[in-house]
Image (cartoon, rainbow, N blue to C red; front, side, top):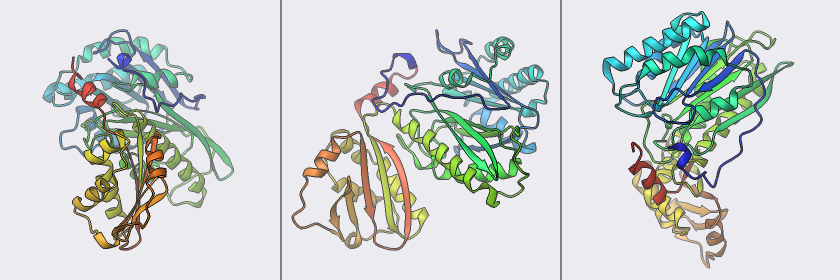
Length: 411
């Protein structure tokens, strides 16, 4: 099905993904749901690799999410197995047995404990995962793992995605240069906590699990938890960060160590880049929205206001229709339950203030705003005028394409 969808007009090309010391990736066709495309991905990590994870807040998580949460206990990882086409969610005992079996399969191939294998599944909810197909495909897949397999892996985890998503960068820890590289998938059922969304990031830095967990949690809160396609939180979301320890950086024991300033900034930037690629592939997308909120009573309040605007069907359809209807922004701010005052509220679109302190600017000229609405990236600015809280959120428009894709998702 993924191959039948037209590529998003906001797509970005896959960057060059160089080898990253301590990681080998591969992808194969296991026939789990799709025909004629890869749907099973495996990675093997060097001994000593540490792991961190952030997972969906859904109260109905998939069996792989439960598995990974439990496997995090010792903070070590040697393998990753991901399948597309079946989410292994709401499958009861059968879902648990599937995770047990496939973790054991991968552990035998890598020669590690099953608890060092991380699992992820994405696709249809409520169908029993034919895990035997994964078991049958894993030995052949493991034999093909390559340090150059990143691009194949990015394609292998897609569902309704129309283009593969990846990002790469370097950073310094003290005097040592390290690489950070990641892939992601996500297109619909995308709202924070985290988005329908799987993302796997690796670095060759040598960092303990507790440190990378702190860095990842902070970074996700500024990226994947600030995006929304449709306000729906997936059952299967996860972002995993693996640190292979192959770089010879100095020992770090605290996440706030000054030597990590550059690494933290690079990781934050890479996570946001991946998150925005998900928005660029929102189901039926024709435009992105970037919402900036200032003047809120707290940063948390500003975040909730920004997300309310990004999630509003009326704001999203106005953007889709290129209608500079700023009243819909006022509506979304007013309904979200956060502190707001009509008489201190200011709204701008595309760098042009339309209303300030509760009233339309005298002699407001809509011309530049109308021109901005015809572009692909829409900027909405809101100043609540109450205090110093700020936040950003990213979303997309709502088009008939979203209905077409989701109305026929299982067919």
